[in-house]
Amino acid sequence: MNKRFLFFIAIPLSFLLFSSTNPLPTKSTAENLTNEMIARTKHIRSLAYTMKRQERIGDKMNETITEVTLNRKPFKVYTHSLAPEKGLEVLYIEGENHGKALISPTGFPWFTIKLDPLGKIMRKNQHHIILNSGYDHVISILEHIQNRYGSDSKSMLTIKGETKIHGHDCWMVEFKNPHFKWIPYTVKKGEDLNSIADRLKIGEYMVMEKNKEVDYYDDIKEGQVISIPIDYCKSMVVYIDQKRQIPLLFKIYDDQGLYEYYEFFDTRVDYQIQKDEFTEEYAGYDF
Image 1 (cartoon, one colour):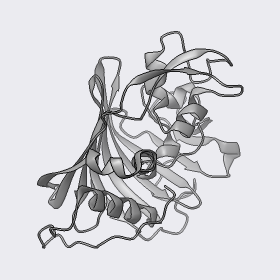
Image 2 (cartoon, rainbow, N blue to C red):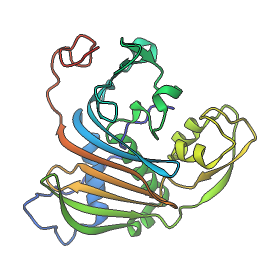
Image 3 (tube, one colour):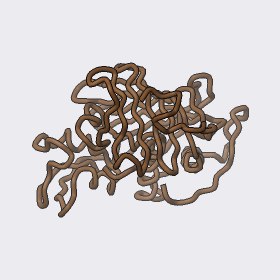
Image 4 (cartoon, rainbow, N blue to C red):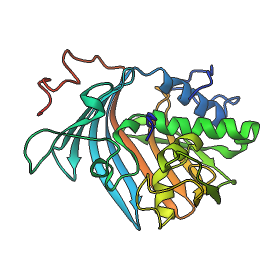
């Protein structure tokens, strides 16, 4: 997969700033709030959070809880699993270790190993790879849809109300996509599911699961006709922190129902990165 920062893109925007203590100004819209969130996340330099992730694998929702710290440029990310594999650590540093991630496992072989972030072991039972950590991947999807449908995208966004997420006042913004459907796609020379998904801003796992004859992301060939969704999702609800203009929860739906759920706890934006952080020698790691 080409690197697409999570969660998750290219046109600069300027928007109004809001205070969590003030009511929503009458001239504000769901589009304003969404664009404000997009603009804010693009300026984040470092990020730390705990995330509860639920992703539909087959007919079940697979749940994990993970602590994450990352630096955006250059991209560095450390994850520490709290559940279900408590203690599992992963460290990826852009441009180092020949593109491999360092893994400190909780069982055999009991020593640090290096694995390909695109490989089957690291991608098992999850929709996305470690390179998608953070907000940028989902944000890129929202921007792609805005750019694709232009002014029509305004009617797809609605402010559903207010709520609290972990003590933070949030706006609930719903995105509904009436265009979502599955269409045939003819594979071009040199393409795999990762490159197709990256270009069209759709979910490669969703495509692989839909096409039962495809066993893995590179198991397609030129001229093959596969089914792909026209967009990433049918609907999405984003919970936006009113004070910090960052997302605290994403609920993402396809034509079958809830597909992905990403909830962010204890989020720290632009925190001070400590000396030796994102290295094997850092005292806070166990590599």
